[in-house]
Every structure is written in structure tokens, then in C-alpha cells.
Amino acid sequence: MCEVNAYLLKENKESLIMEKVYKLETTEGQIRIENLFGEQKFITAPIKEIHFDQNKMIFVEPNNNP
Image 1 (cartoon, one colour):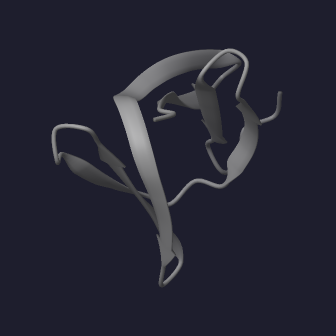
Image 2: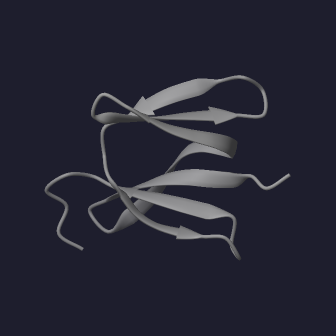
Image 3: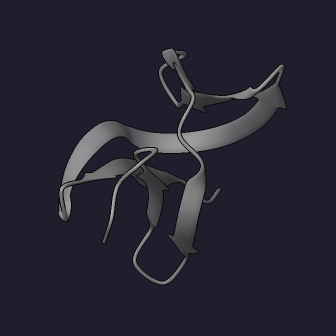
């Protein structure tokens, strides 16, 4: 199984949102992420990039100027 850690990029700094995300689903303008423990969060920020080799998914805060 492949899981990644989700981060939010804000003011050029990454902050951890959730570890071991294995499921991502879009729903009505949001992205729902779920981890191996059944925890879920709804994200309104768009995905900037996914690094499978680093097990990392980065969301970017709207109006963030990297």
C-alpha cells in the first residue's frame, strides 16, 4: 500500500496536515483526505504537487505567493 503525508504550504513553509494518507477524494469544491486510522479532513486548498518518491503531497494555501 502507498501512503503519503499531506502538507500545507503557507508563507513558503510546509506544515503537516495529516500523516499516512491513503485516500483522496474530491467532493463539492473540497478535497477529502483519509488516513490509515480512519481519520479524515476536508481541504479547500488546491494540490500544488505530489512527490511519490518522498511520500509527500503538498497543498498550497490560496493567495500564497511562493
